Length: 328
Image (cartoon, rainbow, N blue to C red; front, top):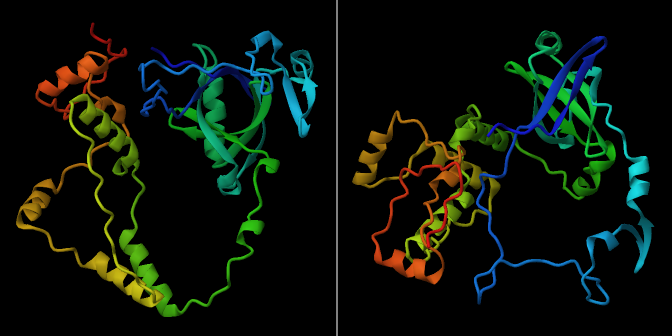
């Protein structure tokens, strides 16, 4: 299924205009999610909208918005009133200015989007705008209306397209002063700084997202696979203790020693490490949900039948285009 655009309109730089579509650059759908179920029946939990005082269920047409000004006191706002002040989308991202990339404080960044030409026309104009931004080595700042709210959007070239990043308004960003004012001013010796720099140099490298694994997500997948195969809940390993280090200088020295001297490994482990050299790290971010085994059967009956069978391997999970159907 082709991705669905969150927004369609036009991108304009002065007199140059082209039709564009805005697509989300991130997704949470690959993550494991749970439903709430009744422990006794196994049925899903359904929530009803009820009056907080009377406990009676309220129909959707009788529900309106209210701004709380005091305990049990609300300013009622109707849908028509909200519609009257809603910003009408001009369906145009007008580039207002160009700024250096470092000028954008990371605290203002909300989420990224992909901006591409919409349809078969306007590719020339899109390329002109994209390459103009690229040649300036700056970020284009504009505004876009999404769900009746106007957002600041920063545009920068990404391969053949543009990446649009929504930015927060100043009132949405908290000042750091109230959080940092109690941090003590301490004197750091040159030796401490030199040791710390050595540690940083040994850990320096390029950021490669594939090197990182969502360990909690993987633990959820392992838990579900084990329960699906009728196995017990895995025991949690005790956290390793590195000992208490009171002296900061000692801590830096021990950290440096730990980086330069590898811990002794068993013979079998040493051989395994030799074999693993040169292999690419396993990609964990590319759809960890693929590792979930297909569901067969349902309820307690399925659990009993699965327990009798040999545990299934999850080494080569296969993603299915549609959700697996329950048997029976």
